[in-house]
Amino acid sequence: MRIAILKERAAGESRVAATPETVRKFSALGASVAVEAGAGASASIPDAAFADAGAQVGPLAATIKDADIVLGVQAPELASLKGAKPGAWVAATLDPFGQRARVDEYAKGGFEALAMEFMPRITRAQSMDVLSSQSNLSGYKAVIAAADLYGRAFPMMMTAAGTITAARVFVMGVGVAGLQAIATARRLGAQVSATDVRSATKEQIESLGAKPVFVESVAGIEGEGSGGYATEMSEEYQKAQAELVSSHIAKQDIVITTALIPGRAAPRLVSDAQIASMKPGSVIFDLAVAQGGNVEGSAPDRVVEKHGVKIMGFSNTATHLAADASALYARNLYNFLSAFWDKEQGKPVLDEEIGNAVRLTQDGKVVNERLLG
Image 1: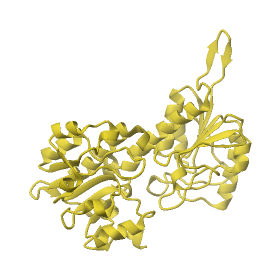
Image 2: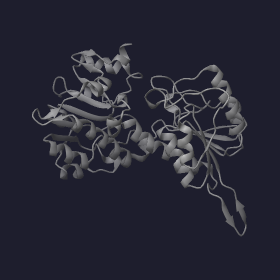
Image 3: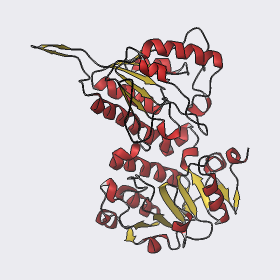
Image 4: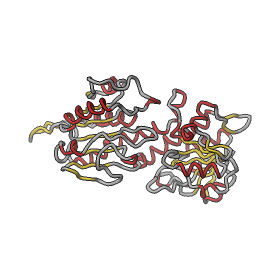
């Protein structure tokens, strides 16, 4: 069983799909691991570290040759897979909805594509969930980046020259990223409030010491929503939430938006009129900017100033913490493959529940129900 780790070629991508730690663990399972030269450089992992862990380090052609499994962070181009075995697995975040043509290419090429972002959010798959591990870091980074752009202190400071009031931070969307954003802002000493359409998140917000801001007059989603995600709400709820947010957002110094709906454009949470109501010098970080954005007028990888408010968001937030993001992502991949490792066959054998959820292509066809519906 040969596992190939390719250098990421997507613009701005600094992560890598393996670390010396996971190379050693794969070797202990009986697999051989090949790493393309330079694959870990941008994540502060030199080639020598991979070699010392037992990996074969070399050029692309030597790395991909006869590979049974190819691991990546983002989807590798079909040309990069030339030389892999027929039917080889390609496990990465594949953006199946946004890059459907590439999925079709994998099918025609005879590869079995496994979309890590399709990992079901069930208890036994938590350690394999790349969206959670990367979102956790993204929520942290969003607050740090917003604090840097804000230009004022976050905590209350009492000095001989006078008192500096604590910054007010409002987090919109309380999934994994939102919860980490709340926790990080609290650690920095801010007054934090948060909102979500899922009623179950109210207790989570309070447990982190933040103030929940919820629509009370119209029912939201009971529990956690579908697969742990929020779903699109009724027009009545959206109107009530917009009114509530408008009155609250005008008092905030920092707003962090994190709302995403799988397979859909990001929902619009903050309008131009709401931005105009904020104080000059306030900051909005749009974590969903790469999926269309929660904030009107936000743009990936640049600061947009509207009505004296600075709006920012990264197209790939986790890559700004490449070393830690790579370490967590690589462990997700190892946990995934090792959980299904068949010692007699010397390879992983997926079960139906998780296998059918993540498998996009097999035997030359697109087979995932989410893409065929």
